[in-house]
Image (cartoon, rainbow, N blue to C red; front, side, top):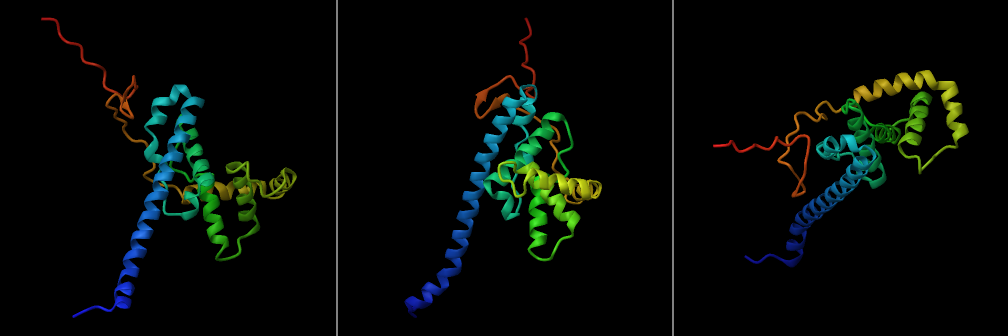
Length: 197
């Protein structure tokens, strides 16, 4: 039995879509790894005393399935906030400004959001993406004056609700090499001295 060429093309379309989708996702993930590495290196320069911990914090920065969070400038902001928390010894589980902005945008595409949520979004947007303002500083100040306390409460609640429970460093182990280069890492085991015989 011989398949018609049109039938073969139709059968291959789902496979081609699957392969294209997989290739795109892998490419995006690799891009995120490059951006993540850039942000880790920058954080290590800003916080040399926490450099070893920052170097080992890459697993905290994994992109999620939220398509907006894998946009370069959004993802970089997300990474910077988490790395600043690592350097300061703060909790890395609460949602980042970028994560909350992505969520409020997703909600706003489905239903209108209340004025306090909108104001909170504006506040976090300006903090997370200072190079991409959507309001003037005086407009942000106006929101803060009118809704500041309510925004604070909503921000705390949203950070807690969107927290990533397993986004913690845990126990860090190091083989004494970073990217194949021998380093004097605080998490590497102490060198064993040969006993005199």
